[in-house]
Length: 448
Image (cartoon, rainbow, N blue to C red):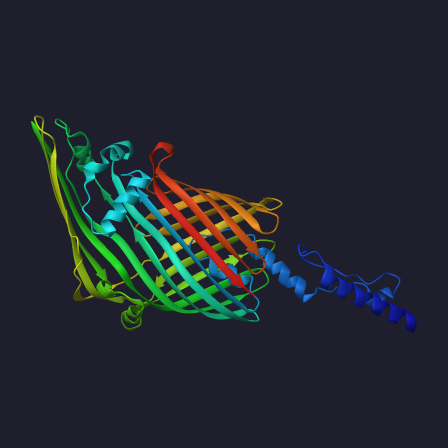
């Protein structure tokens, strides 16, 4: 009997060591059952789950989530980390239905360079794209984070920024530039005052707790206004035997920081003048990330506004059937920052996803996001993995303003991190002849 026990222990030791060194990395659980020839009442039902296999299982989970918007990447990276993690993600989405995508880039480059923009140079491009109300906006969430993991708890830090914007204006000023002859047409006076831009920046401490198939993270820290903009807009059109129009946009940009001399040291103004906020993210999944939800920029207290600058646009348009249309547009070309004392409260961003496996290495994912100004965006992805490393994605997303985005992506996923890149274009409605709005996204993470 003694020799049988020695033989049994040798077989058991060989089985465990062989499993640790030669097991397929794709196996989620390795089960070792004692041979039935041994005393069953004493040994039957004994199982061994090597730690290395358990870690590989967690890393396989992380490799199956492809680029999620919002604040959800932090919890996912933490879930698949045993000692340390670092990562970042960013999405930048534009929304406009005024210019073709390459013309839009040219106008943006001229504006940022302080050059004069002559809209008549883009007549044909505007004519090809223009349809109804003109929508101009940009939406983004950009963050970086890191954490040290102690058993199932993490402590770390984060820094992030968020941009929420939407500006709507009537299309008739551009129609006058293009066609001139608008005699007999009527447009109601357009007048509105609302917030068109809300951009914030924040940093702070990160904490979290996780179990075998879930993770929750909470980030707390000061925040401030990077740029907050209210705009009064008045558009008036008149037509008899001539056409005339006036455009007035009066706006003020507020910031916690002095954007006229902004540098990295300016973040100390956030620490001294900022309000306090929290970010919360949660992911769950056993074999793969099944769903996740997040709330970003939930404010506890107000932040101070320290600086402001006026930004104005004034335009006049005139057309007489016997002459070419004339117009003048004057806008603030240089922002002048002055001191002020106001308060600001960041608005939260809500995001979530639901992920399903439909075949080996093929997943479909529904996702959504809500921002106060830009509104809802919602869509679906299908993605697949070629082997265990390379991932491919196609995504179709719509938003509450009627824009549709078509996005493709490629990713590199390993047991120690991932890198996902996505690029897309959008149009107002399903109109491939009016592609106007680029978007780009990146996600990277490393974990041990």
